[in-house]
Image 1 (cartoon, protein in one colour):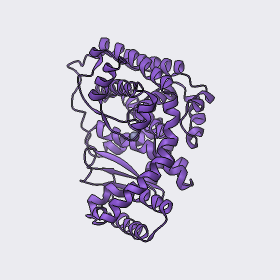
Image 2 (cartoon, protein in one colour):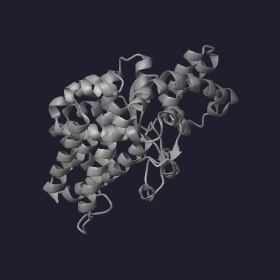
Image 3 (spheres, helix red, strand yellow):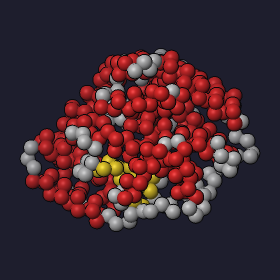
Image 4 (spheres, helix red, strand yellow):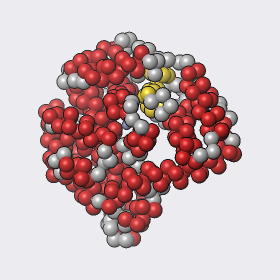
Amino acid sequence: MLPFNEDFSTISSQLDEMFRKYFQCNDLEQQGKILASICSLGPLSYEFNLDYLQSQKFIDSIMSCKDYLTNRCLYQTYSDFIENKDYHGKVFSNCFQYLNRYFENNWKPSHSYSFSSMDIVHDEDLHLLYDFFNTKAPYLRKTYDDLVACHNLYSSYHLLNDQCLIYFNLYTKSPLIFLTEQPKNLAGLNDLVHELGHAFDFEMNFKDSSFEELFHHLFFNVLGETMSIYHSQQFLEFLLEDNKYKDDAIFLLKNFFHDNIKLLWESYVLTLPSKKSMLKNITHIQSLNVLETELVFQKKLTKNSISFYDRFVNLNMQPVYTYGFLFANYLLEHPEDFPKFRTLEHQDFTVSTLESMGITNDKLVKSLVKRTNTIFNKYI
Ligand SMILES: [Zn+2]
């Protein structure tokens, strides 16, 4: 059983304080900073029934602050990505083609796999977590222990679609992890490990950062997402080595890779429109099928490449997770580069940052090929 905190009074009074400052403030830049801190905890207002969020003054301010946030953070962050869209498109397309071929030939869920993840009992969650920390990621143990000691591991029934998520409290500069309930199975426990990867990233890099650095990091957070996906995949691979959990771990890993095939395709599609149109749609959430249909019309895609499913796609979602997945596999293959990779955290994610580390398109594909073969050929 994880030691949850169910008392929200501290967060509630922090939010009260922030709203008070927010309404007293007349300086747009300062207001933007307070707003960002409120937004970092805003979704928690479900817990407190806050009326402030509905007030017209607050809604109007959000609109003017949105310009501040867009101009200062979004354009700065995305301009390099858009400028190098063909480079990124090629990375996504090469990796998509490899994984798609691989799984069409190999992804055959056998009857022996359980389709609902394996249940865990009693204190098995804590045993597994500590076993994982001790064998694979000792530093993550400290992240977890600190989170519990600061009462920042919460349970909440109000998370919308997620079973587990993390907020980074910009007010106190500390990570808060929320779970709807005790993890009942390995999939639930893996979600927690993912968020602990984010907590580790925050703790290590942003505890003493300026507000600008922090806020910048929260947009297009490729390097942070790498830390969470890296630990999540490492946890699944750790389970794979244990006979008791092997079948379940194979199933979870296959699902994990399958989800990433989708993300690779969606990220590739997002790099196909013109630079002008990408700039215009930086903050837009688009329908994948609508975007694909437009690209067919522009002869950038063929008709039979339209997806069978529709999903929302956005420049701040798919490419972030996709690069997180590709870097995670790169680092699992090249553990010697882990410390060097960590030093990138305060830099923007750009093509030249990648190249300064010697991470090329070719190396990303090769690492993915090698890791996929090791996992799936060894265990199937
Ligand atoms: Zn994440």
